[in-house]
Length: 569
Image (cartoon, rainbow, N blue to C red; front, side, top):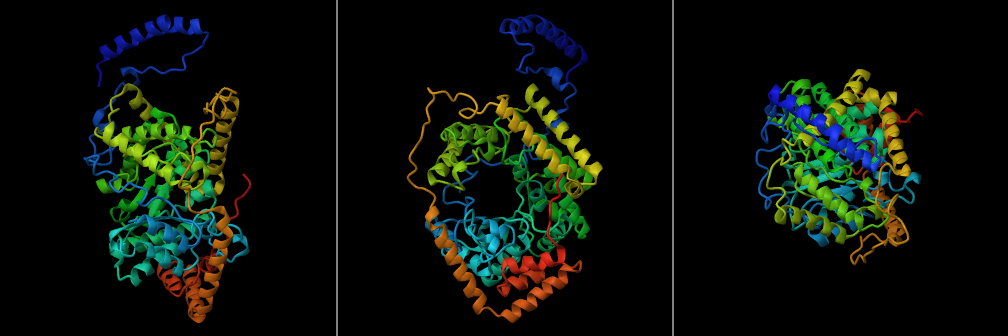
């Protein structure tokens, strides 16, 4: 990129500057070394634009996944409080009524904790948690009620559904497929994304049920079944964000997410599929970034480049649809960067996140509403402000009108290389261990995240990491600025017991009127198939069609696979 003589001249001038003006300034302020970083062509010597950046929509996709992301007017055109905002609470009836009042055109379902870990609402472990942090779904009847929200508004073949579900993903996916049968919608018309990323549950969130290897078998079965019968369903949504929120660094998040993606990709190959058949239906999300503006932009660019190279080298395909990292531009500040102290400061954090999102190839969306720390989708005002921030970033500031505007920056290019190198080093270590599953089984992944979480908290407590209003600028003269939220989330805590009672009554009634013999026959078939290597999806579909519960299906699988018990590492 630069000739040798030019670089030598810059090196000489930089040395003079470091020993002269910089040294004098540091001495004047009593600082041993500069906390600021100033980059020159020396930091990207040998930088090859075509190899490192390339054109938008072309390998290595550093600049953008798409050649033309579309005008600002076209991006996020349905982004409003009525679009598919992630939500769910109480009973299916409660969530249905909320969605119906908003005339939603898409489903983005948050399930309650019992559903996520395969317990029915009447299980002793579920007491007090039914419908608390998401909607309770015990049987196909709950799914049927939930989707009554869209009657007269849209149909399954004209909408997208997202399910944040992992361990029992086969059961929830089966319910959705049966719902399609009931509505006469062919499977190949369905657009949906079950998260189905079980590996990050073992290292971050903890809503696992079965040990890693049988859990991966279930994921394999969903990949194989959907590839053949429902090819528009995104079979796995690899989520780096939850690992970041558990304490992983930016480099660890990239490396771990990609190691998991590689493991899921190998499942597709194991099922006899070609990369071109299933890789385009993987999505990868990195929504939870830090407030380090330029490093997060570099992370987004490095992520696109790493994924393209990994696909090309490990899955031996040059197919652009395989190398394109779908959902890669969901970069923004994470939940862990938002504070309950001085809540309105999160508005500023969100706008900064939206700007870095736009500059890293996204749509300018801030990520989370300012009052997210108070609970899932706490207020409609919070969502409205986040959505309007994105609109201002796109339409007024026009930050989405230029693709990869920081390409060529000495600092950003060097930082992109740096983040990629850090992530690649961790990925190489995971490869040496034997891959993502082996790294989890050995405790490597959990230990590394725990170390990073500890180190981050230590820096917060010592003040090395500054969080405004939390560990600095907290004197008596500082103000706690508040606001009145007029439209609170409809799930009043006082209604929780009533919601649980309604759900228990509904579940009891379903169990009373269903064909119990048919349920037993179907569960027996699930058990039989689980003990073989056959695809478990058809048997699961028949079971939920007979109104077998999430807990009943998962209990059969617990019997066959056992339950995962994390070791003390």
